[in-house]
Amino acid sequence: MQPQIKSNDKRKCRVAIYARFSSDMQNPQSANDQIARIRYLVGRSLIRLLKFPSEQWDLVIIEDWVTKDEAETGKVADRVGYEKILDGIRRNLFDVLIVDDLSRLTRSLGSQIGLYDILRFYGVELFSVCDGTSSEAPNSKSHFFIKGYMNEIGNDDHANRTKRGMEARVLKGLSVGDTCYGFDSEATETRLLHGHDVQSHFKIIIDEQEARVINLIFDLKLKGMGHPSIAKYLNKHGYAPSTRSQKLARKNPPKWSPTSVQKILSNEKYIGIWRWGKRKMMLNPETLKSVQKDMPRETWVEHLGGGKIREDLVIVSIEKWNAVQMIVQQHKQNFKENKDRNQAMRACKVPTGAVSSLLAGLLHCGECGSTLHQITGTRGGFYGCVMHHRKDPNACKNNRMLSRRKLEPKIIEVIKQVLLDPAQLEVAAKILNDMIKARLKNAPDEIAGLEARQGELKTRQTNLVKHIAKFGDASEAINAELMDIERDLNGVTTRLNELRVAKVDKLLVTPFALKARYEKLAESFDKDPVKANAALRVLLRDGLKCTPIPRTKGRKCNPNENLWKIEGTVLVGGQGRFSNLLYGGPERVRTSDLRIRSATL
Image (cartoon, rainbow, N blue to C red; front, top):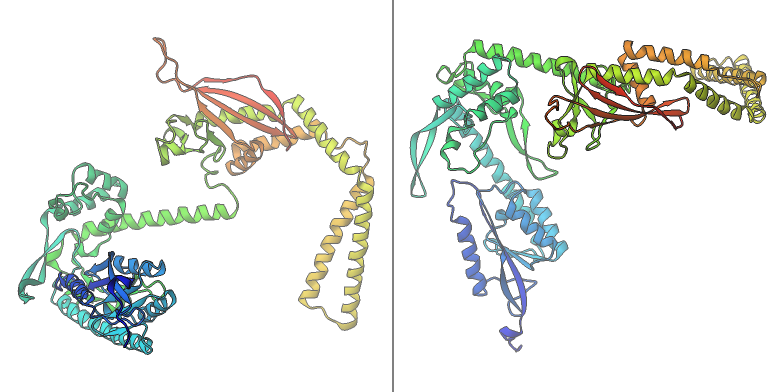
């Protein structure tokens, strides 16, 4: 006879409990009843564990791990309580998990088998009270598989019965939870469930107060207002997104958004077209989470058997609906065209804003360093700090704006002066000539390398010609290789001729030639904004730093004074010129002395 182990000598076994009930139609006390039953069995040592027998282990319920999910389906894995239990298993925060039934954890076959593997890997024992089985039993995996398979079949049968019942109600024109803003529902029948009267078979009716708001939204759209403007108007004038939510004593009631306005304007239910089954919640087998998927047109179910307009549920007239849809479609077409144009410009490596903004990407805020974008197009357009005007006004206090029609000509004027300055042209020509002469000093070595390359190309060319003459092989690949060799040979020959006639002491670039080149470039500033923006990105490599100058104070101060300090470096031929501009008012542009700063082109 084995000696009895005293309770004080037993080791502690940490126990977690999980409970769940499926829907609001079930008894809300169901989860609490499951937990109470498990507590009773554990307290009287009526649960026989295999890995932790009660003769050697004292089962201690960890209160922090008494977890439940209420009104949650077992087909999906993204449940708060269930995810918490999985996290506890992985972190080894308890030794045993007890449930009333395996279906309380999951009703999916794949999830059931996956859960079994997780339990075995982390060494946690699972005990199901109703099944009377432990995950440590020799045949437990087979039991998990059979139980999961039965639950899976039950899920499908239950889903088919539910869908059949909902389709029957749709064909009668009743609500199946598909009402939206503008509509309400009222029960037409009452049935007894769990000893309580439960209302059912809800008839759809129009909410007159919300219907007036819907017509207001359509009217505002016909006046040319966009979705954000309509949302702001509704919020400003106190129109709640739902009269039912307004009845609830919420601290922060919901607000209208551009997305909610867009959904209102595209909802066919407001003209009496009711379709059910356009989308379906499905379980993603990879993530085990429910996602919404669009269903084929032939599977949709229409109210009252289809082909009928619910005249009793029409809120918006068909004339108003068609007029709004034409506006919406036109906006979508304009958006698509602009998107395609911008994508084509990016594919060509042309700045998106270069066509409409000469200095796009070149102006930077002196306060925060952000880019200055065109903020408004009125009166020729104005540049402003994108951080203040588009992102976070608190991050940058620079609310001043620069007029395009006043700023751009002055910037171009300064750049032209720098480009065509005779002294600068002399310096640029000298630097370029020094660079060319340095390369020509290495001409003998380069000539030798090019001659070797020329001989190699001629040999390959001769061999291919002989191959064609002997075998008559004039395939596409052979012809393409011959063309490549000929192209390379022409380039090598041209470069050799240039090096052989070049003289180190010869002046290769003159200031006059540079001036002609820069004059041609300056012409593009007025004619081709795309080319001009690309050229300015090279000349103004670091861009222009724009810092607003504080307005002067005093009795004679001008409150509309708008002075800016604009700094930047223009690179010309190897030298940079640094300019400070003071900008403000129609004629208040002054240029300070220009200083030369060394920079490499």
